Image (tube, rainbow, N blue to C red):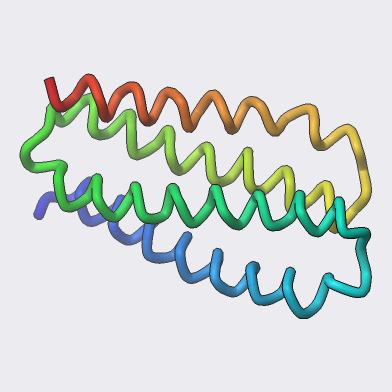
Length: 123
């Protein structure tokens, strides 16, 4: 396993760990503190973080069989997506600063770039 492969497995594992912790925090710590709509927003952040944590783990495992450049872009796309998409949703719910929702789509675009590069890397 190469350096970048290990990096994406590490990021995926950490994102999964943090996702489980944040999911528990949302279910137990936020349930009575935020509206059901805002709790759903938080849960969306956790769900997308977990999807992409798994994607990073799989990418790390598959990377030796893929185009290194595209696999690298895919991995960083997933990582940036987690930070910006999920992170902005967490910040929005915890701070109630609505403008944070405006940067969420940037993270969504990073996810899309990651998936497109992963798909192209397999061709």
